[in-house]
Each structure stands twice: as C-alpha cells, then as structure tokens.
Image (cartoon, rainbow, N blue to C red; front, side):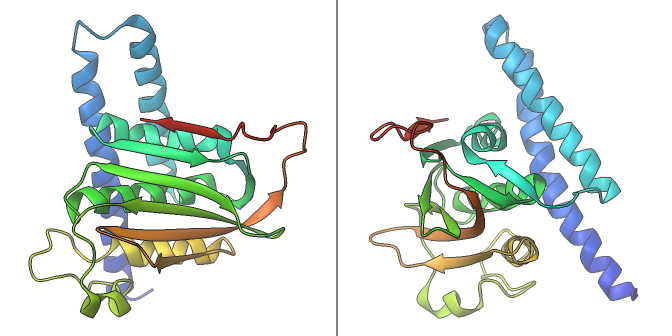
Amino acid sequence: MTQSSTTREQRELLHELRSTMAGLVSGSVMLDNPDVSPEARQRLWESMRRELDRMDRLLSGRMGPTAEIDLDQALEPILELQRLKGRHVEVRGAGDVVQGRYDALAEVLNILVDNAATHGGVDHSVVEVVRRDEDTVDIRVSDEGRGIPPEQRDHIFDWGLRGEDSPGEGIGLNLAQRLMTEDGGSLRLAEHEGNGSSFVITLPAARRPADDDVAPGSRRAWTY
C-alpha cells in the first residue's frame, strides 16, 4: 500500500469519526440536563452505546459482510445520531428488507444528512423508502437547502473536490458512493423539484414483506 493511499484511507476514517464524535458530544451534553426524563435518558444511553460500538468497528476495520437489513428496524437507530446533533429527519415508507452492511448504510445516511446541514444550510431532511421493483429498493434522502450548482453536479462524487466556499474536504460523497457500490448497490444525485437536492441510495432487495406483515395504508412514517 502506498503512502498516498494510506493517507487517503486515514482521511476517510477521520471524516466519519468526526461526524460520530459530534453526535456523541451532543448526547453527553443532553445526559447532563436534569430535565431529561428517565425514558429519554435510557434511549440516549442506548444510542450512544450503538455509536461507540460502530466507532470501534470502524477503527478496527470490522464492518463485516453483507446481511439482510430490515429498514423498519434499522433506520430509527441509524438516524438517532442526527437527532443528537439537533437535526430533524422525517422518515417515510420503510417496510422493506435490503441486502447490505448496516455500518455502511449508517455511514452513508449520516454523510447525506450531515451534508444537508453543512453545505445546504438546513437541519431538516426527508428519508423516503420506495420499492423500485422486485429486485431493488431506493432510499431517497432530500432536503430543501441551497442545492448543488449545475456546473458542479457532474463532479460531486470526485474525491477531494469541493466548492470554493465549502467547509468540507470533498471526501464524504465519494466515500458514500463507493460503500454502496461495494454492497452491490449505488448512490446517485437525483432530479429534485424546487430548492435543495436529492440523493438516491439503491440496494438489492432481500425480500418483499408478506401481505399480512404490512397492511395497506399502514406504511410507517416518523420524524426525529
């Protein structure tokens, strides 16, 4: 492994660790708040433990093989980190099972929601799960922030490329796209009406929920 590739991997690791640490710091501040209820405190502890476990796996390179991910069960704990940072994430849909790595999906979702706040200037994102066909599931992450200038859209996934006024390093989107490709899926910039931007994560579908598992009109939706 060359020195340049090592440096690049180190920068990618630091990129994700900084994001995770920001959520843990915010969570620790909330734990010091005497107004936090015992129930909320317990959920906070559980969320922080999950993030510490994920951080440990990142540091040791133990992201693991792909497996079935039930999005109803996975999205809430994954996006809890964003709530700890003071962001609001509205989730629509779910009810599907995909094939992928939990830690990779968590990292990509955190990158997209962080970017909406850091580059788009908004603390509200919408995550919508849509079954595209029998074989694939789309997870669309949208915001109504500043959006991406047309002249930059063809290069936003290039490693190290960022706008002149960007506070980022140009690492997150390239890393996110590569992680989804490694899991047999993809990440792309989608057409978006109005302000803001939309990114679509596509992952292989593991199975379609049985008809008696998800009744018509009962698709989940919640906001953090």
